[in-house]
Image: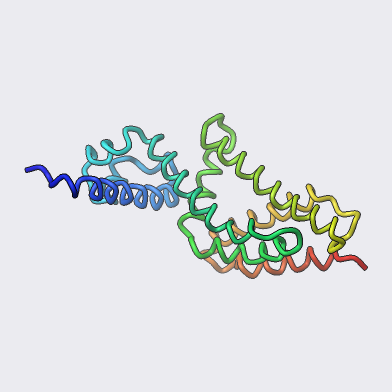
Length: 202
């Protein structure tokens, strides 16, 4: 018996969401190569055919997971982008805490970026472009803070942006490997405060 017409779309959306949640968890734990479609279907409580109906290939599913994660990252960055100059940099001190609040997405980012580090693929290009956008956001903030006289005139915005990104990445990896013993939240706050103190005008 077919489901009533009014229930088909919500049910389909719920199943799609369940697949994406299951795939995100398994990709984060096992990597893209280690997580099979059959395991993801089982995790989502669906048959293999039910999963393939929504995502015909594993790559289709991966890209959908990345797009969903990107939307969440944009939401997390919204309070940062809403500020300018030194205020934006000060808000970055809390970004480690933002990442700690979603451990699955944080683990997924680390796992997928490592797996696709050297290959020419959509996933690789996605991470390359996202890093470029993030460094540009930081470099712009350093430049604005310098122009406003809030930071020293001799700072190099590109270098400071790359260093801050590297520290955030390093803290993220250590946080995951230490099962939270190394604090992203505390480490990022201390780093940003140190950068502002170092670059503040005499």
